[in-house]
Length: 472
Image (tube, rainbow, N blue to C red):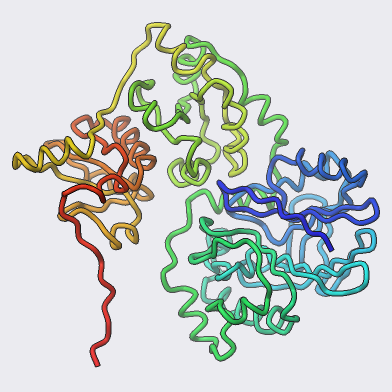
């Protein structure tokens, strides 16, 4: 049986495509559906079903546009209550795609409608399971997301449901089955996912902490909930879009890819209160940008950082991008529900500059320049905007940790009465932080070129976290 995994690295997202005798099915599609349509066309097949494992929080699914363009039937598992026409399947129900079969296995826990799909080949052999966010490689789905939409679904209740689903529905299945999860490492839907994107169920029973055969319910709940960080703010908004429905991507793209000259761009910003989002590389942005714009570069984890730092998915956005990258930016915004892009700056930042309009820059400092300051006894305050786990692993002595994720809640911790230096791991996140601080009125700071990756090779003193051990 051939199962095609279609992986999108910037979201650590996996969709799946199967085809048999001219019939095809897509599982958990991304927002832009043309690649799936093209894939089916290549096979001279029609997409018969779009299977959804649950109402996703970290992206907007393409199921509605795929149904509209192909006539495919949308299938959810038990307990789903979509605000549009869809088939809500029963536990154990079987669907046919050519000679293949797909069996519904209701596995609540990540959410109450979470469903695993058992794939059965043309000879009737069980081949694999498409697990959504129920089972990852090395991890299981976090049980604290649904409560942000339905308050009575506490993380403890959902964790208990997940314990039952794993032990009563997943673990009894044959070891040879291939596990096809919805996400890999880097997704915020779990806490310790592997970089591998498939594995056998048997191996996961051996190495996945959540599948230990001797684990009690209480132990499972405690281990699952320990170490969970707050989910990105856009997650509940994406869930509601997936439940209620959303605007067609074609309309989003048509609106978002309108080319605006500098005058029209500035007028639109003033009239709508739109956020000016600059998607260029950090080093390029630092040399010149539109006042009050925020830099989140397309070259990094663009969509997740937009979701972390722009609280409302409906907020109007105006784009500054490298010429030719505008459509990519609008598409990647739409994947996480930011559908209200109003257009982009025609000709990019160069057009703005040539029009004689106001330009800002932000300071950068090399590691050598920072070393020279320290040697002279003029050591500045250093603020590390990496995650706390990165900081705990190794950091500069006396550096203060203010993770980028929470910057909007900790602005008061950035001084205005003395200079400071920002850094992250490589420069991507610290430039996001720099742009936010500039927008909020800070000016007396610089950003370290190359971030901690460069600082590690410097003579500046560092401290390394040493894991405590039990003395016998």
